[in-house]
Every structure is written in structure tokens, then in C-alpha cells.
Image 1 (tube, rainbow, N blue to C red):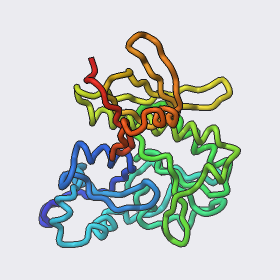
Image 2 (image 1 turned 135 degrees about the vertical axis):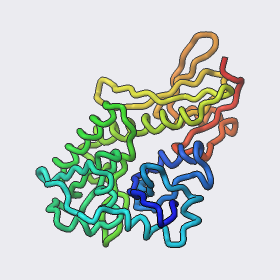
Image 3 (image 1 turned 60 degrees about the vertical axis):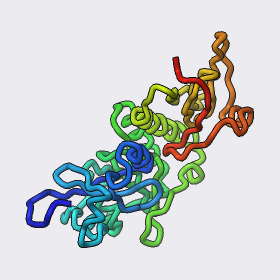
Length: 283
């Protein structure tokens, strides 16, 4: 980090697990952002004058990184007004404040335990764990953010239990909203894979990006194409479209595809996760 005698502005920065996975490719090792784990898929790091504080810089610090994160939080902790039990925070520093110091939520009236959705750095939502109408509004916000095309953080919420953030099993809690929840999870997955493909781009392997398909019954699915015989990094999707060089196309579920391929397909350590399908370089 910058020497203490230099005047800089230090601000917290929110990360999702998928973005950190991409940064492990583009900024590995000492160049990777130093972060504090919050819960679920959410992390908080630091930026100095808008420049990310890296692992290498943090290792050289004389004081704990966690303390530096706390010092970066805004001293004014008042949150935006609740709108029928839903609080939308569009200030990243303020949002990081409630993630690092959850006691800042104490004044908010919610229907159930506090649940936080870090959908993007400019849209962090607080809602009660028992508030179905509030969850519907979160889904609306999430879909709108995807349609805007900007970077996303996570569609996996956390709930405050005994002073700590833990994953919130919203699919189980709101089974009646299952179709919409699954749709949002798939939309965020597509955006994460798009960012990863840009980081992985290389001429000797096909980067298959997932696409969205909405069936007539309203179910949202993802699919990706595998040009048969071509070396491919295949995302985790619902269906795989197998394009034969002869011109035919067949469809298999992801599990059917992996079972048929056996040991030939290798699970990689990438995040978000992909499978490597061996073959010739793309033409």
C-alpha cells in the first residue's frame, strides 16, 4: 500500500467469487486483490485512489489488512430509507460497511433475519428472510441489472445469523418462486462465464459461452455448443449442443454428456468451473 505520509483515499471494494476466479487468471499471485471473506460468495477488498490493493502490497503492510478494511468504511453509517421492507444501497462503501460491520443494520425494520444480496457494486439489497414480496423485488432488480449489461457480483445471498453472514438457502425458503430464482441464477452465471472467456481467450481452444433459453413453460435453461472433435473449455450448463462436422446437431444434458465422455473430459480448477474436452485446435 501507499506509504502513510502520502495523502490517498482508501475505499472498500466488494467482490464475488466468480470475479476473483477470473482475476486469478489475469492478476495471479502477488498481483491478485487482497480480500477479506464476508460469507457465501462475497468478499471485501481495498482500493487506493481507485487502484486495487494487491496481495503483494498487503503482505508488506505493518498492520493487519482486516483493520485497514475497517478503517476504510464510511463513518456515517445511516442507510437509505426502507421501501416496504427493502433497502437498496447504491453506494459501494456504505454497502461494504454493513457486510463488514453487520450491526449497522440494527435500525432497519425487516420481516425476519437480515438477508443481503450483493447483486452488483452499485446495487446491494437488504431484505427480511421472511419477506416474499421483498424477494420478488430483488429478483426484479437482478434481472434489470443483467439486462443493463454491466458487471455483476453474486446472485447468492447471505443471511445474518448470530452476528455472522451465512449462505441463505432462498430456493428452499421460497420454493414457490423457484422458476424466477433459477432464472436469475442462470443469468448471473452467463455473465460470469462471459467475463471468464475474455480472460481465457486463446487460439488453441474453443471457449464455449453459455446461452439462455426460455422454454414455453417458463423454465429458463442454459446451453453451450461443443464443436465435436474441437478442444473446448465447456461451462457448466443444463444442455450441451453437439455440432458434428458432418452438419448434424444433437442435444444432451450436461450429465449425459459427461457420462458418455468418461475420463476423456477433465474437470478444471477454473472458477467459474469448466470442463476441458480434448480435441483439435479450432479452425
